[in-house]
Length: 184
Image 1 (cartoon, rainbow, N blue to C red):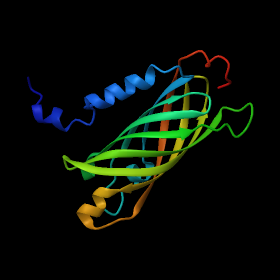
Image 2 (image 1 turned 180 degrees about the vertical axis):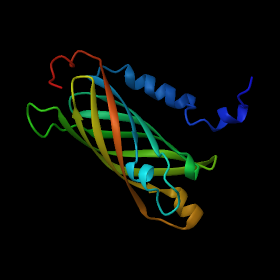
Image 3 (image 1 turned 135 degrees about the vertical axis):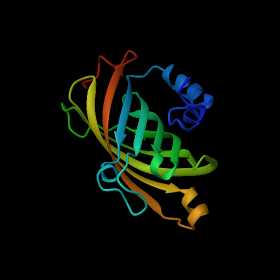
Image 4 (image 1 turned 90 degrees about the vertical axis):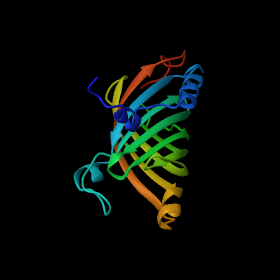
């Protein structure tokens, strides 16, 4: 086979067994919808930052919603700086305007950072997701994220919070009994 095994070790799409179990347990609960979101940091993609040239900082999220609350599993990969983050989050879903397809979802998250293939760094943060659905199955979101990365404190003695913005494409799947009762 022409594909090297090292490519699979570095692949950003390996899923630890614990995350699969958590995702499955979330999906068995009666919920109104499940959403898969794929996004990127537009600033890093277009202009880069102080530590990297323009490159993709990808964010994949799966969130499970009922009428007011949601649970999120996320994976972020920024290969230019050797960074990956696996995380879980919890938030509240708010519909600020009646009869619109807009949602605002403030929340908290925690995660495990893998920096240059080294495990053991934790992250925690706060985010607000502003979502607009074009129809009952697809939409866009703007995720504002403020994250404390402990890897920066250990590696560079930098203990600041990092602010990021992600632009996401969302696909929503109907689940549960409550989906038809809600306006999406």
